[in-house]
Amino acid sequence: MEQTVRLFLEGYTTGKLSDFMDVTASPAEELLLERMDRALDSSELLKLNKRQAQYLALQNQINPHFLYNTLESIRSEALIAGLDRVADMTEALASFFRYTISKVENLVSVEEELHNCETYFRIQRYRFGNRLELSIECDPEDEEEIYRCRIPKLTMQPILENSIIHGTELKIGAGHLLIHLELTGKCLLIRISDDGVGMSPETLRKMNERLEKSGLALADRAPESEGGIALVNVNNRIHLLFGEEYGLHVFSMAGTGTDVEILLPAITSDREPRRGALS
Image (tube, rainbow, N blue to C red; front, side, top):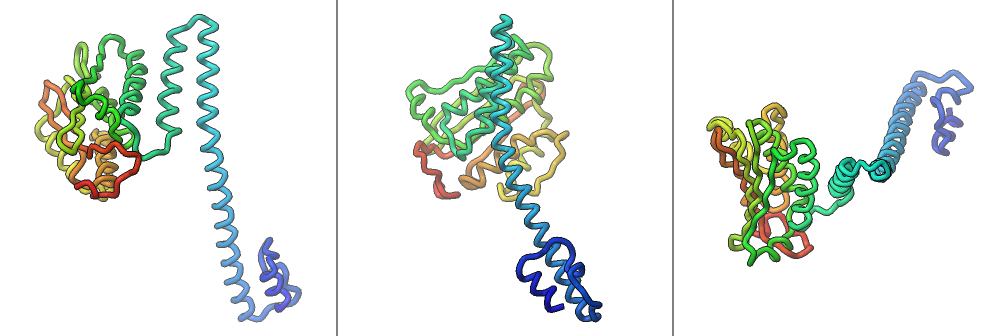
């Protein structure tokens, strides 16, 4: 028994400790060995989990490069074959994924976000053709300052996507999307509008009730079939970063369209503010 414990302490932990016993153990010793075996199993499991986590981390670093290289290969083949439309679509897709996956900053410039929205819209135009139009507008006098403002990454594109899926895609005929930006005091107001099918008063009420919940109330688990998951996620991130005085509010009328207003602090420095520090 003494030799078994010594082997355990010296790190000889392959297999069960009872395998090292050269004599019959007493009941007390068997109980001790059982407890040591359980500790050994837990330790090995932790080591295994750590190795798996390290492997997945490495895998996640490799996969984006594999994706970009594959898309670039497709683009090159398309250009050689004279398929300019396919090449352009592939380039847009690679640019969209590069922005979405690679950048890790919490805050990016409005200019970067708008560029990503335009890239995403390019991709959608291949699907909808001339059925879909996108406009971006702001006061020319404030444009430079607005474009330098820092906002949470992927604030606008998920809402733009939501407007297409739940708004313009469902209507008959062409659809128009508008991104309007303006400075109001110390705040930046972004309004994303569509002329789609809109919402009923009851659906609108439920949506705004969900958005009014605290950003810390991450237990919101409404099924995707109800829609609005993208809006809730963006709203939660804004609450967590800046406080509950900022966030989203939705205006809509059935058969007319929907406006999603995003209220954010107007900040232009690279330093990310503490939550609630801008109130």
